[in-house]
Length: 463
Image (cartoon, rainbow, N blue to C red):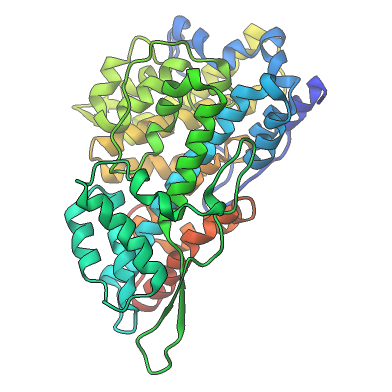
């Protein structure tokens, strides 16, 4: 059993997951002091996990479990094992870890698909194997464009490699059945041992690469490629493991995963009839259980979701003043996030009877959470550039305990969609050691980097 002080050490220590050469540093200086009323009302502020966990007795269950210290360090694989060894006491921690891995691999699948789309779509060269049409089909399926997926599969050569034929047949069967999401039943035959998840395990995604194809050149070189489908299947297996760990929390898990869903996936219900256990929000980027509902709603509805959840969700209340004429204003949101961090830190000092070392990292999580929430709203509101500004600012502040692998891989997926392979590669490189299944996405990303650096500068609209 880990000593109660261990998690305090983890919270206060230097636990940097990723450091960007020019992007990831310390938080920017806060704006001028907010008026005495603060960003949040006293009632909403009191519902945040940071303020509630400022009291020793509320924090004690998390300090006494080694899994939570590992979780705060964003060592999800090790946290998963620690929770699994804790039996019934670690059930919700186990479910949370599996759910975070499900979100991580969902975004990794999107990264691989987007990189393949740019590499073998607009940047395709004559030497590319014709089997790359399969990867274009997967990207179209993930994007919710079944007609494009059908056209891509129809372009496969009659003598395609056997492994591509098998994978294409699985997706074709889903298309023939009406292309209703999810495609799990049609893809079941593609799920090898490397994507089968048992409680407490994080498999490596199976043999890499999934495809070895022949280049259409005089040299007939071998082209190694990964299949984003395998990352999707791994994500779904972790999701199933999370729900098996705590079946009663299935609806909470759906909300937890909603902001990281593929574009083709339908959003979950935006109401919740059961209470949210603190295990789903502690050391996370939802400040209260109501925030999980808000973020799920905002991921598809955008600005209207802010008003719907204003009375119950701290994050909705923080984002609301940054909305002007139906649009999220990034500069206002940056101020809101900084003010929120100040307010949360002050409230923790008052609730806990003095300053403690974990207050600043807890407050940083609140600030980053606010930026991420506004980013989600802006994305769903079709504010592409504004969402990008918020995303990059959140990335800049995602250091130490705020360096969430799920968010980092989502930024890599966004970068791949912008043909900005350089930062995506750096993020993936730093994550790959702990998530070896990421290799399936690296093949197309490496190709994308080569082609964009050869032909043109990366098209990154936000730096």
